Length: 229
Image 1 (cartoon, rainbow, N blue to C red):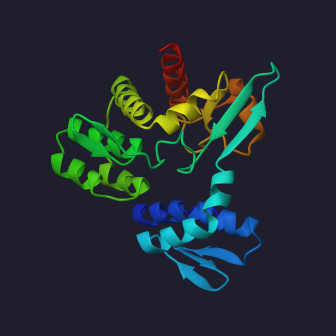
Image 2 (cartoon, one colour):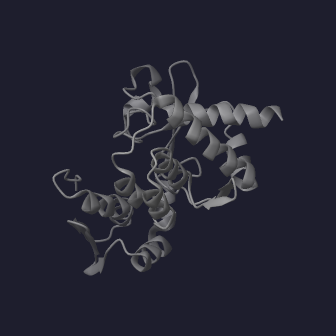
């Protein structure tokens, strides 16, 4: 099912939470489909509630994780490691708690959207972001709060530094990528992502990406910084 942008933002958020599990269940041979914002697998209905999401992760989490990263080789022989979705440790939606200035954040996405609200003087919205469990749900809360590109990059860089410094197992995974080109294969984002999908043939052709892959660039810069220390 393609996500319908005519749905309310809240419905689209729930759809994006459920879509990876729809894809994973289909690959596992289950009878499944997405009915607006309800996932139906073999007749059983799942919504985007914390309880149902835990159940989906228990049954299909491994299959989702296996589909969140992909390697491709460029014509020059470089390896591109594409990633997309919260099960990749390189995603801003990946659950990895860290602390900045005494405040704890469950994901980099929470930190980024918290700062978008906070720097625009929207303290109440920033508080709501912190109290929202799923990072994708924070997008609707922070909608309309804009930062210039330099500030956006600095905020996310700060979040990534904290995340990987304070979670040694994630730091190790980042360093293990060596010289690979890290690419957020997000077809819907031309700033943070590549603008192409994880399974697209374009993943191996960085020169043809419509997106700037700023998240990938920040991660590679951080990887170099960590390897130098």
